[in-house]
Length: 223
Image 1 (cartoon, helix red, strand yellow):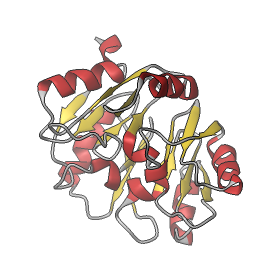
Image 2 (cartoon, rainbow, N blue to C red; image 1 turned 90 degrees about the horizontal axis):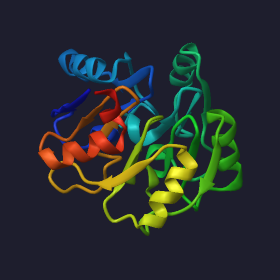
Image 3 (cartoon, rainbow, N blue to C red; image 1 turned 180 degrees about the vertical axis):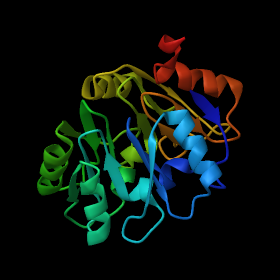
Image 4 (cartoon, rainbow, N blue to C red; image 1 turned 120 degrees about the horizontal axis):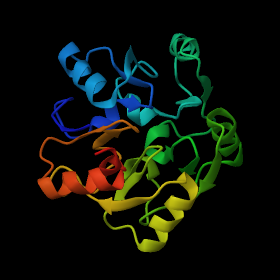
């Protein structure tokens, strides 16, 4: 299911919410009616939480069905909550806390910013149980903001050359495409929430943008 809705009051739903194929972790303050929209669109259980006491959950963590890697400043009670969900949980070592902004992952692979240390890459690989490739994309290190990826497809910043689309296809093990949401926003990772069941995009997304999202994330195969 693909929905074009204002969930958090601005286009950056991927900054505030984190989803896998089974759960969506949303801020404590998110209205129940908004949480219900996410639950319906993505076919997930809703988990209300925070990371490092912040509501910027999508920025401060990256997850797949196997695990979740969070900011090094995540609270012990937050880590315990995620462990109770049956996930492998680890804090990302190093100087960078916005894990979700600098890593994109599905159940097959992950792309991480090249400035992450070898220790940080090892933690990502062990916790998410995937091979992690270190690379910039579109001349930028904010990989998680540039890409929204699921186990069925991915959408990447419209400026990505074909070689980088091919690279992402190899890493994630699924096909994808370039595009925008929210009437021209290229940071599709920050402005999209997606999993294998559906996606929520910025409210101002146009019809052609919606069609590109459907195709890139593999939803057309469901029809």
